[in-house]
Length: 251
Length: 153
Ligand SMILES: [Zn+2]
Image (tube, rainbow over all chains, first blue to last red; front, side, top):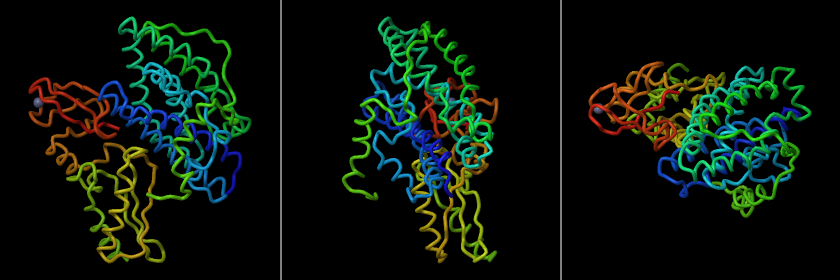
């Protein structure tokens, strides 16, 4: 089986889940409270589990013998096709929550739409991801409200995080060249149709949290073409160090 | 052939979930089926509760061990995602074992979580995320005891 177009698309989805999952796993041992230690770790596990299913499929679509580990551990940042939003550093807890909110408000309608994909492997991954993502979104919206309506300091930080990450939200609805064809074939959701649901979630959450929606201005792009900030390189260097030193190492 | 699949089922259905040892993978609905292919090779089908469930690797190894002990060679364990696992797949026996462990079984649609100690339905959620992906933290407002609940998924 070799399908370069679908391979590239599925690889981008897998990279979104892995990069965000790895970012969240970096909170392990550093979360503000024990409850969050468990929550962020569980969300990270869900995302990495979803990534594995997608990498296994991507490997089959590529047909070049690369398995999930080869795809995750033996590509450098230039080869990663994730959205630039998910690679943004954890920052303070508010920045992590803003990143979760922006991504997950897109991911929930995305996976819901994907459950109807004509591609059975993608529909199967989506059916699990949809249920898990619903929990992740509740986590993000509740924390946004708690921080936005909390103290002056938590409100200031939450608004600063929203403002800082806003420039990475335009890319959530960008389609790669091949994606329009996949959408027309019923394989992939049309990202433009996700925008209304995202706007509703974001507007309701921000207003509930007494936060202000930033004005649209310059938007980052290029993640799907492998153009990333240097933070992703640092993250991958740490994540991949063991496999780079001992290729093929197994536990 | 039928005898081989029955032997295989008997061997693998008693494999425990490493995170909830009193429950077997059959109780949880993680074990989907045991079949034989045209050549007589045994195929065990399992499904993960959560996409990232770290217990799946251990479960797969324990299935292989259980088959080997039962004298079944050359079997294959397949993971299937569709249809997605649901907490409604937990058997009545599995639900009873959860309650016995002090873990509230997953509530049905619209139902409230029942305290596993005093059976009160007046309970409140403390955190949606517990020690494992499949559990959340609750407190009973009648007996005031905190407890874990298996999440409805
Ligand atoms: Zn009670």
